[in-house]
Structures are given as structure tokens and as C-alpha cells.
Picture 1 (tube, rainbow, N blue to C red):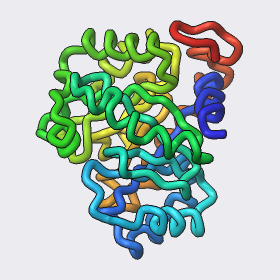
Picture 2: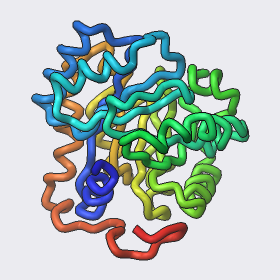
Picture 3: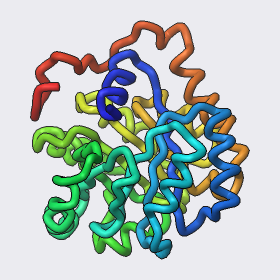
Length: 268
């Protein structure tokens, strides 16, 4: 099970590294190279998805990943058509930072019959777009306005609302190709209050930024775009994230005890 692994890592103060693969931007040759590096680095999860998926054989693409990697593959769908039983799980995204009803419930209704009958581990996720300094594909396709980068109070209240609605993960994303990563101040503000695991992605291009995100309180970081350009960065980024988990100050730390505890919105 994938979600218990995420919760367990949070409980222990361990940080996770998630690799995002866009089938439209990663050829089979690039994919094999990236997966070799991912195995060497020890990534925790692989997300597969895109705002616009032009590759019409998602099943085959995921099978290629699973033939080469034992790491769980999780769908990160841009719409209700990006579904595959070949994956291990799916982030069922509710775009709680926007007001587009299609991405709050409409697409979910379309996907529900498939997900209900599938073996996918479904993880309801509050998805929050944060302004990364440039318009992104996801903001355009979703027809929503990102939360301003300097409005940590709005981000906090949005994340709180997501937890209260029973969403099991909060994912703050500056979007693919973001000019700026989400600030440590915003990450810290949100992580210190919510009790469900916090995932952060978008605009993370250097090991230093990866480390800053987990130091600020992200339980997992997602990196994709930077690795499409420089796959070798994967080793350095994972090492940076692991350095916090392995540091003496992180040992035995339980920043947000979840297992068996009552939290706002649900019992874990």
C-alpha cells in the first residue's frame, strides 16, 4: 500500500522523493536512462501524467516503467482520460485552489466507474496551484488562477479546508516550468498546521531547493521538468533530501503523529 508508506514516513520524520515522468516529454530512450538513475538514487514513488497527454498508449508506457523499476507507479492525471490499470495507484486530484467545478467533482464523476472497478489504490488529494512566476500549462488547461506566491494565509486556509473535507494528501504545485519554487515560508506555514502529508512540487531545479523544501516541512517533493533537461541531477537531489532524513536532528522526530490519532477531517 502506498498511502500508509507516505504516512509512516511522515510519522518518522523521513522525507520522500517523487519522480514525475511526463510521457509526452520523455522518449523511451530517455525513460530507460532516467529509470536507471532513479534506481541508483532510490526514489520512493514515480508519478506519471501530463496536463495534455498526446501519448495515446499510457498502458504500454507504464508497463515499460514497471518492467524496469520496482518503484510504485502512481497516476497524476490531467483529466479523466489519463487512467490505466497498469499503475499501482492514483492521486485523485481535487483542484481546491480553483473554482472550476469540473476539477472539483465533474471529472471525478466521469472517472468513478473505472476507478471503482479497478485495483488502483485511490488517494484523494487536495491539489493547490501556487503562482510560480509564469503562466503554466496546468493553470491554462484548468482555467483557474493560482494562489499568489506571497499569500501564505490563503494557501493555509485552502489546505485546512482540504483536510477538513477528508482529503488525505495536500499537494502544493507551482506547475511544470515554473520560474520560482514555492517559498519555504509558505511551505512552513501550511505544514505546521495541517496534519495530513504535504507534497510540494514545481520549480524545484537544484539540490539546494529540494533541501529547502523538506527543511521547511514538505513531507515529499516532486521533481520532473528539471530532470528532463538534466537527468543526472536526480542523484544529487535525492541525496539532498535523504540528508535531512538521516541527520541526527531528524532521528526519532515525530513532527506530525498520524497513526491512530484523531485529526481534523478523519481518523487515520
